[in-house]
Image (tube, rainbow, N blue to C red; front, side):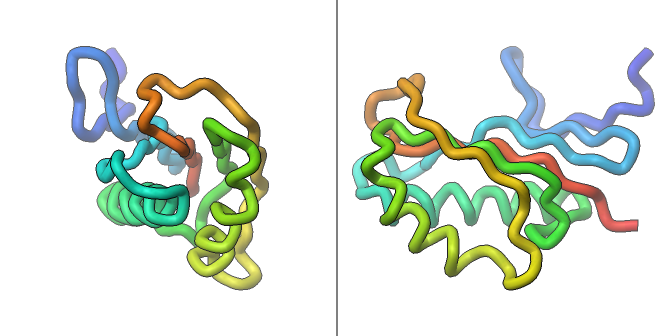
Length: 119
């Protein structure tokens, strides 16, 4: 059962990633450096995404969809500065950005990514 689904970094509550049918689904990535500003937290989260995608055999040029949750939508311009520097020209994925109450009040951002695995 579920032998064709590969899960990475499995805990009792969630997996950081699942790979199925050539697609990798990342869990919501949150900052590991809580005591920083939106730019630093965004850079931290994007770095984690790079690591998880590489581990799954993908990269940011293969992102199919991104969902960004900000604790305060007023941070969108600063977050976009970091995002725009990170995204590869010509490979910007479909994206939704919304304001949301995040699980930890110290988190300013959470990002969920779905990407194609390299063939």
